[in-house]
Image (cartoon, rainbow, N blue to C red; front, top):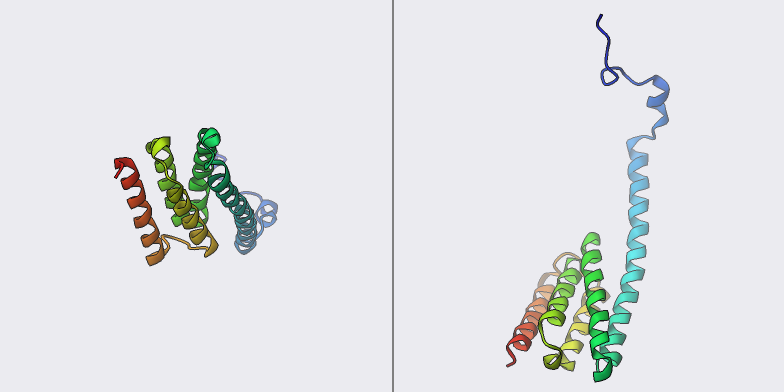
Length: 156
């Protein structure tokens, strides 16, 4: 007896016609992605605004600095993970550099000017919606932030 496995059998004709055409599925997927991009943009706006507020008002108060650093590290971590998903690799790289700064530079050596520089980098990259590596602007921003981190780590 030579029976066909379920794998070898063709699905009934009614099942073949129930699936939307590939173009419809693609259009639906594009709509879902566009919705997620809009959601990410709103979230990134809020995260960068919060990061700015913490850097410029909470971090500057020595009694609140430790808590501010924890909050900033969380925001940087979230931005790092989310931005690249939507093509904002430069924002991801800035967030990575900022996270390194916050982790590796002792609190006593962190400088207000460095915080302002990071805030400015986030605002420039996100405000201009620089995608990918951000080209020459992105390279310049990252080189400046790498120098900030190196100088702060070495205390010079």
